[in-house]
Image 1 (cartoon, each protein chain N blue to C red):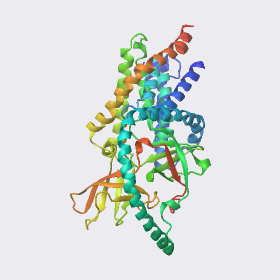
Image 2 (cartoon, each protein chain N blue to C red):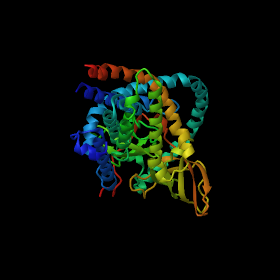
Image 3 (cartoon, chains in turn red, green):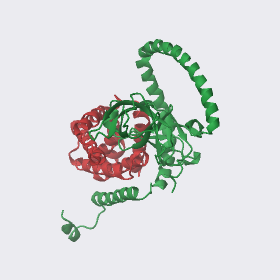
Image 4 (cartoon, each protein chain N blue to C red):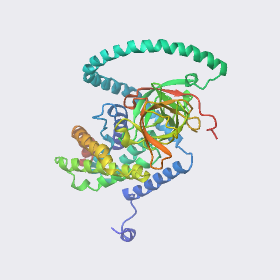
Length: 167
Length: 289
């Protein structure tokens, strides 16, 4: 129960921070994607189910406030969380390389799927522009944010999720 | 781990695979519903709005404060240079203003004669604050702190700084989502103020990197449209009220078909720094079916 409450609270806080603070203090017009960091972290730390549900929650919030169709972002975030859950077995908290690599590739996948479904299908073919101006900068900014946010998420993971398992 | 073996040996467990499957279907159904019907998930909008927007309101104040601070430091130097420039401009404008004042009196008397009231200064408007902006980098949707309880409805036009920002696409009790005209999938039917030629202004993420919005389908057979001409919303648009300033012609070129022209418009609104907007409390007549 405690786990669920903490997860819901984290999704809620991250969404509010992302939409009201980070979208203003952006780096060169590019907003870091905290929701991707959270979804990916829950995936590879807590497993497929947690990743899937956290992703669904993040995506649903995005849909309600910013989406064109309800359910689109929910679907993408959910699958990303689920995929990250596949790496739960090889995740070791001491090693920061795997989480970083996973978050980067998750953000890349997110960017590509947004481009394909929201832009390419409407005939925006200049892929180079979108990769260079949106996807790649977002990955870099998200990577920098990961270095700041990851220790916090890891701390919460150790406090709330690991101790329960040991008991 | 094939399903057959599971049926024989293990008992049914509710694994994440099933949940993924169920939620996928749910999302797909939602998307189809959204696309085919006018179902906007309004119950969801209301419920989620209550737990998120009050906090966004508070926190976005902090965001504004921090953003303003960083900007202040960065721009002091620019401001000093700008100040001098602006001072010169004030003198220039004062002279211009006196001339315009004279014109205005003339206009007022003429308008009274013709009983024209289609200027947008006569629309009833309400001010609102931007409390959240799109959490991603693909779109420029934002959320304002007034909703259906303040009389805001879907499709109401939103302005800021004298220009068109966009329109409301979803409402909750105390919030509304505004889709801006620079968004990649937005199209506005517009016209040139001086000669009423119509054109389509369509948002584009690619062009907005240079601060302009592309337009197309301008029929200007007499070559009357020049750079800097005002572009306003047209009276044939079915979502936007007529006569709202969109921007100024930035570049123009003939299409290969030699009939229409296309080019770019510099928007009148600074979309990067929108903090307060005005919502026009009037829907375009004929849109409610």
